[in-house]
Image (cartoon, rainbow, N blue to C red; front, top):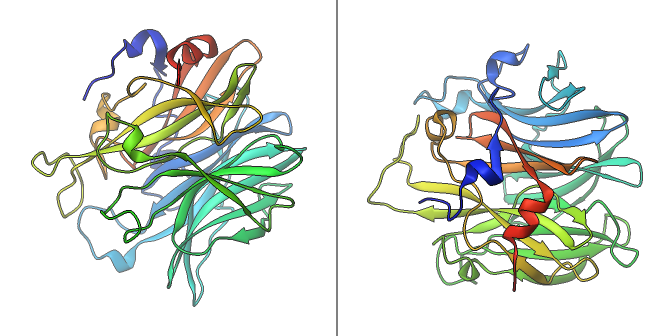
Length: 329
């Protein structure tokens, strides 16, 4: 799969990639990826997923575990990791918390996350003022994940994108879609509407889902999403079994400012596809998963993404160039 435009002129990978890897973490770490990134209290902050416990190359899965770590930066490129993880969940019902997404709303930092439980995968929302203590506001019914919170209220309500993953309801495995919900307080969610069906993305043949929290522009909410293509005849590089055959690429759409369940623009094809060595080779090769997007005052957009489910990376673009890719729908 190739992008229909020159990625080197639209989105540029940072020369210093990856910006965070297991070797940068001062406690047991193996896979550092799918981080949420924001500007909070005068600095860049990153909460990252850390899968650890073995080398992920075929040893018993029971030895593995997950926690969330914190890194901070003055420039968004060079990161310092806290000496200890900041959040881990493991009890009789809940197995782990992972895949954080950060949004600053009204001066507080909110974290969307996935929670593996004995009875399914739940999507959650928590709030923190110090990035070390997290108050869980809500957990969805199974199965739901990939939630991202908008950085402003919509008609006085908190708003989010999410990706439930029904098997029976969609009629085929992994035909998953992007939905919108809203809440008065972050605890009670409803007014759910379909945003984008996977069948509306012709350049992928599998599931789609939210990626980084949306960025507000004068033209609409600029929104990355992940889209998956599956080819069982083409095994990809992987550290694990069974063979891996899914390619994760980045899509881009523009949502209406006042009715963000309406797609008003979309790029014709993927805006970024796996190409670099650190994106092609890892625990799951050929995977790009954006979890943070920051619009700077000068119009630069920083895109933070997990690569190969192994490291965390950075790419940059001009906001005008990204908006130009979103053709009216």
